[in-house]
Length: 320
Ligand code: AKB
Image 1 (cartoon, rainbow, N blue to C red):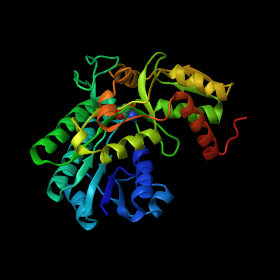
Image 2: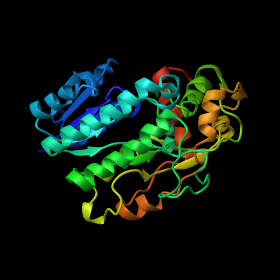
Image 3: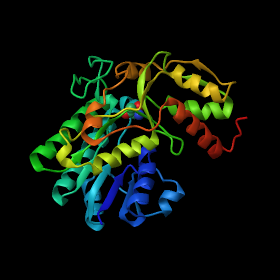
Image 4: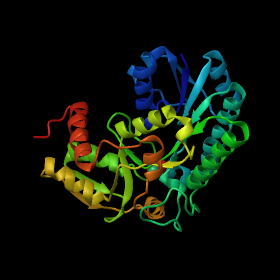
């Protein structure tokens, strides 16, 4: 049995990916790690958990040696809005952290999953049906670290044969753990506020289209890619993956079908609006579909139904 290490396991994706991996591969075989954030009890109690700092290579190496790890899901990262506010921290965590993970993977022969993002694109990238291979000149620190990370992962595969794989995630919508400081966070907040107070003030303008995906599909993308037959992969890292392209008013309209009193107004945050404007409206994910069978299950309608049902249970608020 291979042991798996997850970094960033207390985060939005990490917390649910750890649970999904434990279900699939056995709780004791999935080692969850975080930096400072204490994870929820179920994650803490369902298998090994350690605090590490990916910017300190020895802490990563220690985990890999101790647990004989063969696969690393490296999710520890600073998201776009926080990265713009603290670019030095973002460089350190997103670049030095990734470099350390790749070096440890090279030494101990691990495979590595690393998420890139729609943030790896920039204002000169084609906005619609953004191709797999295209112009990548992002103007944010987050984007700089994501493009450099994609290249570094490809380099480790070509130069050292480290089995690196990864996707470009869009905004991820989920109800278990909140996202921490991204530009697409509004698409999660809107559901919380719709259930709690039937209104939401959006920080992105009407008409700001961005790719999004529901968490079960994000987990499926990571696990399916890591299980894909390597002989079929023409790309290794940075596969475009998307499930829907939506603007704030599209999500609001879908919520309104279930919560008719829901209203939304706008108070634009110039920082996050500028970041969103530099990202694609919708990506072409045909390479992922062709090479490893990527196929999302949820669209905006089915995601909204599931989000509202599960979030209202979690918040213990009856919506009708
Ligand atoms: C963010 O908004 O920073 C992330 C992302 C799309 O990478 N959710």
